[in-house]
Amino acid sequence: MSIFDFVMLAVPVVFLVVSVILAIKAFEKGKSRKKTVLMQIASFAGVFALCMICPFVASAATTDAVAAANASANGMAYIGAAISTGLSCVGGGIAVGNGAPAAIGATSEDPKAFGKSIIFVALGEGIALYGMLISIMIMSNIG
Image 1 (cartoon, rainbow, N blue to C red):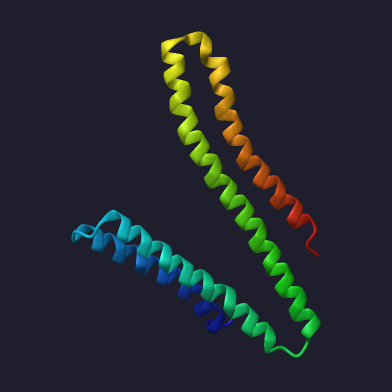
Image 2 (image 1 turned 180 degrees about the horizontal axis):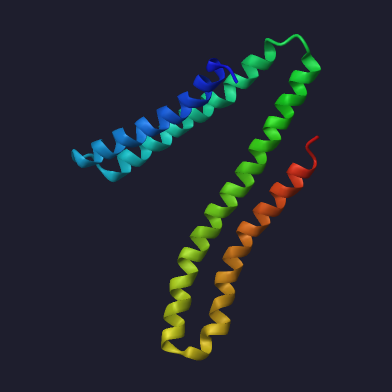
C-alpha cells in the first residue's frame, strides 16, 4: 500500500471526525440541535458523494475498460449490501425502540400479556434479519 492510498483512505475519516467535533462545539455554543444534526447529515452526504465519485474517475483512467467495469460493479454491489443492512437495522431499531416500551408497559399492567406483546418486538427484529438476508444474497452473486 502506497502513501497515496493511505492518504486517500484517511481523508474521509479525518473529515468526518472534524465535522463531528465542529458540530459538538457548535451545539455547545448555543446552536440548535436540529441545525447541528443537519450539518452532520450534510457533511456525511458530501463525504459519501466524494467517495462515490472518486472510484469512477479512477476507473475511467484505466486502459482495461472491462476490468474497470467489473470493479465498479463489484463496488456497487458492496455498497448495495451495506445500504440494505444499514437501513434495515435502522428500521428495526426504530421498531424495537417503539415496541419494547409498549410491551413492558403492557406486561406491567397484566403479566399474562407478555406473550402477546413480545411478538411485536420480535417482528421489529425481523426487519433487520431480512436486510441481512438480502445482503448475503447480494454478496453471494459477486464474483
